[in-house]
Image (cartoon, rainbow, N blue to C red; front, side):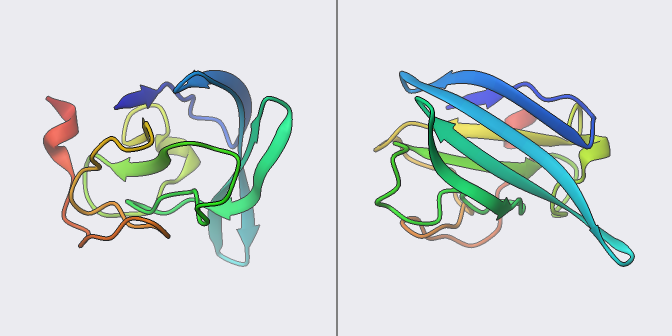
Length: 125
């Protein structure tokens, strides 16, 4: 499992190697009335894997198994059960990657993974 370093900015784009894949990740905040949500785009080797996926606590950002990205990518709230907010990206919310076939922590949910939302503070150790 790999933690991806983030900055507490509402919009960021960076490159990172995940499981041997050259990835470009964009995180951006959008407001809808009183609520602001964080979204994610991912490109692998210059080919878009997904766009506009809502970032949620303990939910795999890879929604479909056929996408050109091997592994799982998800946020975890280290202090509770909230969906990620940009202001806490450098301390409260962690973005994690697990390689294809690597066991995921209990609670990470997604198209090819199941579990109850119970994972949390084990990551801080």
